[in-house]
Image 1 (spheres, rainbow, N blue to C red):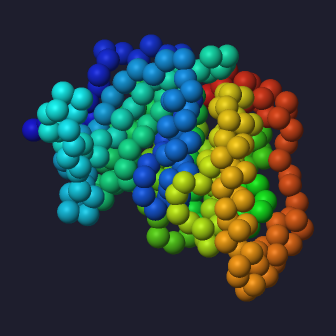
Image 2 (tube, helix red, strand yellow):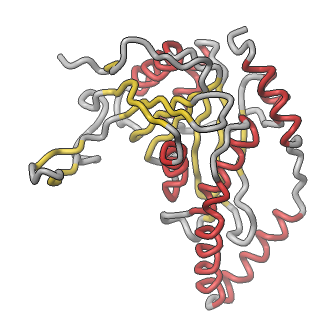
Amino acid sequence: MAVELEWLVDEPSQANPVMVVALEGLFDAADAATTAAHLMQEGAHSVAPLARINPEGFFNFQDHRPEIRFNDEGRRVIDWPLTEVSAVERLGAKHPLVVVKGVEPHLRWRTFARYLVEVAETCRAGLVVTLGAMVGLAPHTRPLGVVGSSTNADLARMFGLGRPTYEGPTGLVGALHDALDEARIPVISLRVSVPHYVPGPPNPEATRSLLKRFELITGIITDHDELDEAASAWRDRVDAAVADDDDLKGYVAQLERQIDEADDLLPSGDDLATQFEAFLRDPWK
């Protein structure tokens, strides 16, 4: 039987990394979260494979079919929905990254979550951050809000995060947070709200918002400003579509009023950076 969690290195060499998890599926509206994780790797100084999770025991391949393609040598290959773990070094970053990308599995969520906990423990991650995106009541005309939450009271207080209040059906991310809490590994959820009237990918505005909030908390440069032009073009396209629908135009104006009347209680970037460094000096306390 194939090893489900396969390590590709003898021992991870990074010191006190931040582990980022983004999975395709329900928690990845408009592909915003997985695109954010991809861009963290794309703009990195170095990316090295660390581990992968074999998909055989976790997927119903009739629901998520593997894809066949021709490689550069003209040979037919099958791409299976692997979960890949990479060591990522970004120039100027005070902390390295461990980036986990893949597809939300269909089966054995508790086992899958335990494997990701093992990755965090083996890499000695000082913090785990899950990136997500959900459709919600967000107007496209405003910066798309990112909800940050943690069950860790110290983290929530230091970084201006909320405490989870949701009750109801959950996904792999919910199971993962529970497993990380049991293992006493600090974890934060960052979830961007995608306008429900334009839920399809790509959404560079949503991806930019996630990267910006991640950078604000961790101080790790994400180059989110490189998405400014694409985000502006996306907003212009949606503006043009909304302009032709009076009912939708009125609805967007209502959403704008709700956002404009909300309080922004985020701490300053300097305060967050100082608190983050202090936290990571002793993340396993």
